[in-house]
Every structure is written in C-alpha cells, then in structure tokens.
Length: 238
Length: 211
Image (cartoon, rainbow over all chains, first blue to last red; front, side):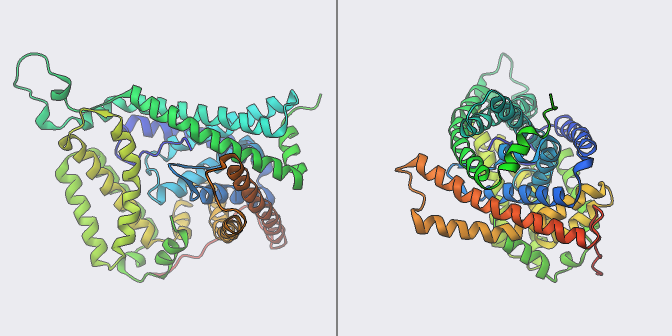
C-alpha cells in the first residue's frame, strides 16, 4: 500500500489544495470518459470493488496491508478506476485513516497505481506474457510508481514540514554565528525516508504482487470474460 | 477499523450531536480544519483538542472508541517522525497535537453521523453520479464484510496464515480473496438487475431525518 498515510496538518496548503484541484480535473475527465459506462451494472461493480479495496485494507500482513488497487484498475478500466480511487479515499478520510485535506493527493497516488498497473498489464499481455507474471509485474510497477508519487509529494512538502518541526525555543535568533543542525531543530531526512518508503515498501509490493496474481488467475478461471474484456476492451480493433 | 461498530454508534446514538444536521456538522468540521491549519500553535491545537474531547464526554460518546480511532493516524505520523533528524519533543509536540485535534474533529463527525447523511449533504455540492457511487460502496461494504469473514474462517480452518511458507500463504490468501470477489461480482450483477427492474436512473434518492 503506497498511498500517503499522512494525517491532516502536515502538508502545506498549496500542495493539498493543488492535489484537490488536479484530482477534480482527473475525476471530471474520468466521469466524462466513463459516462457511457455509468449504468446500473457498472455502478454496482464500481461499488463492489471500492468496498473490496476498503475491506482488504483491514487484512493486515504486519507492517503492511494490501489494497488491490492494481487489480481494481485492471478489472474496472481507467475511467471507473479513477472514480474508485476517489471513493476509497473519501471513506478512508472519514475514518481518520489518512486526512481529509490529503484525500485529493491520495486519490492521485492511487489513480497512478491503478492506471499504470492497467497499462503495464495490457502491454505485457499483448506480448503474450503469462497472466500471473503480467499481474505480478503490473502490481510491482504500479505500486512502485505510486510510492514514487507519494515520495515526491512529501519532498515537495518538506520545507513546510521542517518549519513545523522547528520549535520556537530552538531557533536561537539572538545568538551570533552559524547554527548547528541540532540547534536548528529537527528536519526531514529524505534519504532515510526513501529507504523506509522504497526499501520496506518493496517488500509490500512483492506481497501484494503475489496476492494480486493469485486473484487474477483465480478470477480468470471463473470469469474469463471479465479479465479478457479488461484486456481487450480499450484496445482498438485492428 | 470495525465498520459495523462505528456505523452502529452513528445510527443508534441519540445525543445532541447525533441530532444535529450533517450539513451543519460538515461546516463546523471545515471551520475547525481552517482554524487549526491557519494558527499552527500549541495553545490553539491544545485548546481545540480539549474542547472536542470535552464535547465528546459531555455527549456521552464512547471515549475508548474515539481514542482508538484518533490514535490510528499517530502510527503513520510516527513513521514520518522516524525520518526526522534531531527531532525534539518541543518540535514534534505542535505537529502531534494538531494531528490529534484534526483527527478528533473528523472522528467525532464519523461517530455521530451516518454515512448516508454525510453523502446526502455532500450531494448538494457533488455531481449526483459520484454520490450514487458512494452509496453503492456503502451498501457493498456490509454485504462483502460477511463474505470476507467467511473466507477468513475458511482460511483458518484449512491451514491458516503460516509464515513458514510465505509464498503458499500469500497464494492461499489471494485465492480466498478471489473467492470473495467472485461472490461479490455475482452480487453486483444481481444488485444491478434489481435496480434496473426498479427503474434506476443513475441516482439514489434519500429522505432527510428530521431533528
């Protein structure tokens, strides 16, 4: 799970407000593109997959939890997947699991996972890579890109986070000369954060990759049309 | 994250906060967020946090549940704070208090307002299709929750989750989740057919509860 688990009050206003703006534009595009699909059947499938993502998050594989974002992206297709990302984040923010203000940014991060996972899966299936391998690699690449986006967001917000961490009494405004690191107060070590997010995250991507590949293989046995449709639905006929 | 319990508390409560319209509570929540993000000081965060918890105690809300939900984001904040060099208590305190206050405000809304009431209020500003999708998800959550519990029981009865054989365990978990998904897809198709029969027009209509 690579979306930002940051609560409210950590990131700067311009960043989370910008996240809302870009997410709103993406949602508007997805809504317009997916309009032909918003019949009762699609709504029901969208609701089921969004709910499944939320419920799967309660299955903890400490210190990780799955979320099935890439599987959802593959099955629902780009337009409905973006809507599912938004729905999941609305629910999560009202549960205190991720802030209300960062819901826009989290929608973007999960949408990146879904869309990139979807694209990679189709690309690999076109060159006849086996379903399980294609599913596994789509999850690894999707979650890797999602984590990259999360890291980028935190890097962009790092100056504000650092300013928040500097307690007034550690600024020593009246003392002459350069300040030591300790005197300047805490600051985010982006190298350490990268190790945490990408190092430990990679273990999670592999776990989720295996689970997702098993899901796709099992779903393909019962609903081949669902996975095959997902593979061919948006590929233009040649 | 026990959704049943949270939903039960929101639906069955009779406190003044429960009776307050969802739209009013959402506006107050927006106000609290604006105050806490504008004045990022310890006194503002501490007094807001104190006021919210006093309100919760006065309204006889379950403080243990409130504490459990509020402390959840602190775990994630801790991951961020691990990445901080030269972290001091004085530096971390404003951030921790602000996060606690903001989360308390959101959780108070959650414990005293049903999801349908929140979605109805959001329906005044959001396109009806998005709100309909939220309602579908809410309904699906409770339908799927039972299936997931059954899958969990089946997994434990068969082999459980053993980390001596991680690949096999993960594959079993994936197969169990696929089983739930197969059931879920069937349910969604049945739900869609029922809605079509009832004349569904891509919109869910709700009745507002009178205070």
